Length: 317
Ligand SMILES: [Zn+2]
Image (cartoon, rainbow, N blue to C red; front, side, top):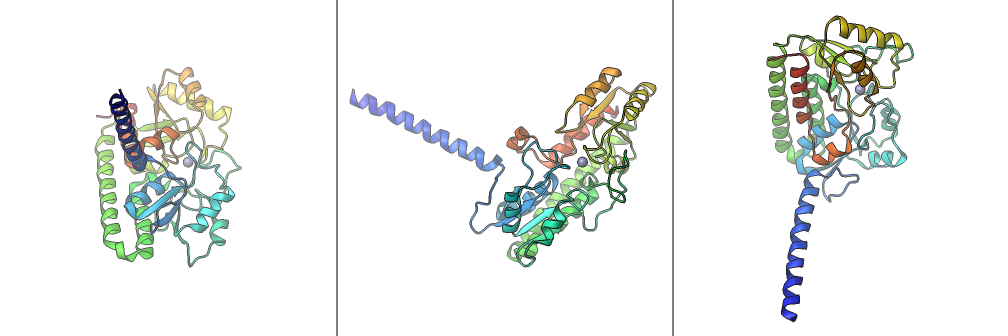
């Protein structure tokens, strides 16, 4: 009897160990960390999903990279909490997208110890484009903050991040340079996939029910782009905007319209209801939903997913 109990106990313990190893294995790969952990690792704080993804790929296992946005939060209206500011002060590197994306960053940067925290403005040296505004209240003279959706810009942003890593940790320069080359070469591949597919589309206009996030992308591939809102989801679209969008869709017999991530699908559904257009998702990648973060979705996966929906929506080969 006793030996039977021991045998059962033994089996339970073995299963518990297998489960724990498996579960921890998954966690270590997919988990989005919320605090710095690793001893002897560089500490990086990133403000937006694209620069977070870039920093993670370039740093590999040499750094803990924190994304300051909680999963599912809309990025344009985000304001950091005091605990976020503490983390930025603790970091070796603070990466932000640029002054028109994170208008809150400037004050924090002015208060940082410049000898300790290396600040990376990822937009340094990128090609800018004027922002599109649909109402008078938005910032005058601003440029379009969605610079990561032009893939030459994305390469420059990644270079800026790699340079900061090399400056902070020259010993691993070779690794960072190699990771940078790999990342840029993947961006080149994706760019070529976009060029080839989008040159064959029957329809050349992206109609987007969200804010003006895809101006860079549309420009790069010779597409027209019409969005229901200006550069930020805070911008109100007027009844007039809505009516002209609906009439445009009807007039041009447009079969598909695109909707944005992390926002209410109401406008999209209403427009789809007023017309016969079907809805497709186009993700600008500012931030990830919780389940996508848990799945470990990457910037490259988002870009390829978008291309596949563009191919459907714009009727390309
Ligand atoms: Zn945006």
